[in-house]
Length: 114
Length: 111
Image (cartoon, rainbow over all chains, first blue to last red; front, side):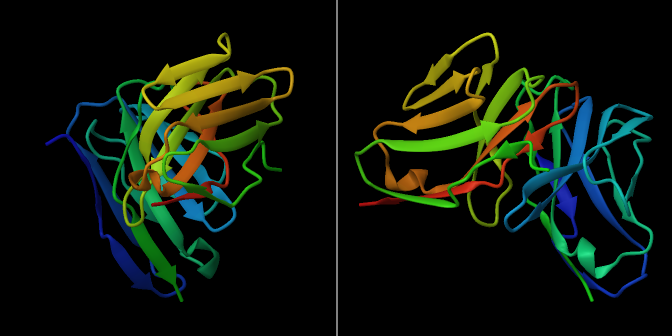
C-alpha cells in the first residue's frame, strides 16, 4: 500500500530533550516536506527536500533540523524542544517539487513539550 | 503576515445544497492553487487544484474558481453530502517546493 508513515504518532516530552520524528514513504517520491498545524494558523511549512541531500527552509524553520540521506526517509529533529513547538506535525511527499502534483500526507504526530 | 487567508473558520450547510468555501491571497506571484481536505485524526488529502492561467477547474462535484484580479478563489461543492464534513484548506505556491496554506474552514453538512 502506498503510504507515508510517521513515528511516533504521539509524544510528550520535556523542554530541552532532543527528539526525532521519523517520516518514511514507499512511493519513490523525490519531494518531501514537513508541516506543523496550529489552531487559527493552519498548516505551515517547516522544511522541504526536493531530492536526496537537498533541503530548504520553509516558513517556520527555527528550532528544527532535517536530513535527507536517502530518498525514502526525511526525519525531523528538534535539538532542544521548547513549549512553543507543541503542535501537530505532518510529513508529506510527492513525485515532484512542482506543487501541482498531489502531495501525500502522513497521519500526523502530536507533540507536547512540557 | 498571512499570505493566504480563509476568513470563515466554519460553515454549515444542508445536505444536497451548495457549499462555497472562500480563500483570499495577497501575493500576486502565486501561480498555483490547491484545496486539501482533512478529516479528524488523519493527514490532509488532495482535492483539486487550479493554475493561475485558468479561472475554473471542475472535478465531479467539486469546482474551484479563481479570480486573479480580486486575488480570490473559491471551492464549490454541489451537491453537498454528509461525508464532505471536514476541514478544508486552500494552499498557494509561487516557487518550486514551497506551499502556503490558509487557516482552514470547517465544513459541516447536515442531513
